[in-house]
Image 1 (cartoon, one colour):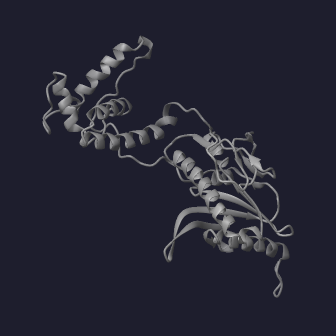
Image 2 (cartoon, helix red, strand yellow):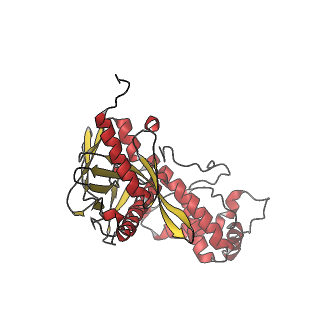
Image 3 (cartoon, one colour):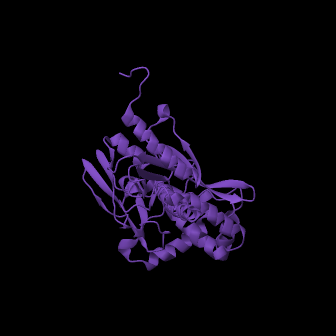
Length: 339
């Protein structure tokens, strides 16, 4: 129980670490601390800002968890593991060692591995490292307790260093580059893709170089693939409408063939004139708007598809989905895409 006129010294030490971290991240743009009563696991909401003329423009949004001790970041329940694995903003771990006057910042891309490889473990540790060269794709995976190695910090500096403008510019570039990787993995998850992609290697206090890409994740089948397929269809329908409307008919037809295979009844607008023209080109009756069943519009596509099927080995062939005006409902984001 607290005593009026006093405070908890250990808690105060932790807040001093947050103040130092906030001072550093505010030099990159903005750094807004989370009030203690609202703290659910992240300490700072930050941006990187570019100065244009007399104004600064935020261009990169990310979050930071600050620790005052060099220890693993632990998540002790499945719900906590779920929380960290699906956070929609780029997330960094910052360790402030006040006695040494040292600050280390770690990327957390490995957390996307958790979501890409169900089921969730019951517990998780994100373990910071001390080396100067790191790899992202490294973990010890167990159902009960998983451990992801954060490896080398992406930034490692003293309090004096970040007063140097050149270091501030380096830090901006480093944080921004890792934020882009984090956002790309979040977008994959949101589109139903159970996969992560990460740089193969990096060095502390160096701009992220194009060293290669490592990837991994669950290979799903059946209904597990449905969210990813629906997102592919959504994007293809838009692109197919655009290319058909602007006259790239060959590319449009190729896209429409895939959409027809993935979904029995595509929701298309700009493609219908191309579909009617294709029917006439192939010697089929041209459908008349409003007076023909929807299947008539796809007759030309289905004739091309049948020719492709005939050229395949018999064991590779499959049936086309049936055409129905109500085959699919309106598109929705995948469930739990962003928590």
